[in-house]
Length: 406
Ligand code: NDP
Ligand code: GDR
Image 1 (tube, protein in one colour):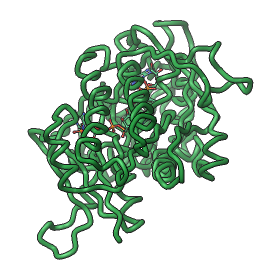
Image 2: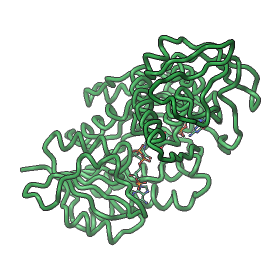
Image 3: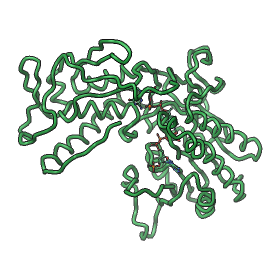
């Protein structure tokens, strides 16, 4: 019998990788997408099959986690063996701007899924994965384990409306497991990234900006807290863990993490280094700046396919391909800041440090990440360089390219 999965948040980073994984495994994959005024399915468009074909394995349904009747109807129609509840307003900083909405979607939305399964009498059939998060720990120093990491026993202390909403999602999932014997698991996932990461999360913001700066399309990257430490993995590895959790004999909660933590500032250094650009840091607090100290010309050309003409401290991008272009910025200057602080990106309460101990997942799920951080940075940079070189091509063809980076 072909297994049936339903994914909320299928149009997001994780939803798209998970859909690919489940399709490879032969599942019928249903996904919930939100109605938007323009297309919002770019991450899964490559999976789309003409719905008139005889054998369709991938189907999208309009819906929303704030709409119980809609969720009940979709679950009744699709009769899923597995539900992956990935839908959420997932941006921590934005959650301070819309706390009530976040509580509704990320908190009560989880309850709506669990209740729908119960109302439809699917408790024995349908297994549920809940997208929990390392934000539950809040980075409290005193709550780390003996290895200096967070594990499944560490106490929670959420530090944002997002974390507070997700903690409700965590506990209600656990409660429905205990009260109604539903096979429901919380995956407590630490940060995971990819070329498909939303543009306003810190890693993708950095890889996009470094690509644009290297191609002469942007001059400065404005950042928030550079001292925050995060345990960054690759989304592709993490969706495999989601799948594995639902294949166990007993439902349990698992931490998924790499066990390595890195400062935002160091992520910036690693990223710029991919295009041969080396930074030095000066100043403190809001006055801190990342200065372009030197460029490895060979590495730059290898990564971008362009050349730099060097005259004193002026570096002009040389390219026969794009010579007719009058781009906004066409040169870089050594010993000038290319990274600055904008306090707008600070959070009212910050999670200073996250690092996860995924020993339980290693033992019970036989899960380990295949990617390390340098591999992740390299893949993200290659992808963003390609993306913005397409922008250069568009400009060359006379199209205006508008991008808003926040
Ligand atoms: P994304 O922000 O990329 O995707 C979120 C998805 O949720 C999108 O498909 C979005 O739709 C959808 N969504 C938002 N609001 C609603 C709503 N009201 N009803 C239905 N769907 C909605 O997140 P990720 O893929 O990175 O993360 C997946 C899940 O895992 C989220 O729940 C997140 O909180 C959690 N998580 C993520 C981690 C990470 O590091 N990535 C770590 C730990 C947990 P649309 O495309 O229309 O906006
Ligand atoms: P996070 O991810 O809040 O950990 O939540 P994000 O990438 O937004 O921030 C990571 C850290 O970087 C600092 N930072 C900045 N962040 C952003 N977005 N923009 C900036 O300019 C900037 N400058 C510094 C932040 O302050 C923070 O410390 C992600 C989301 O995917 C959640 O949904 C998920 O639950 C957690 O990871 C685990």
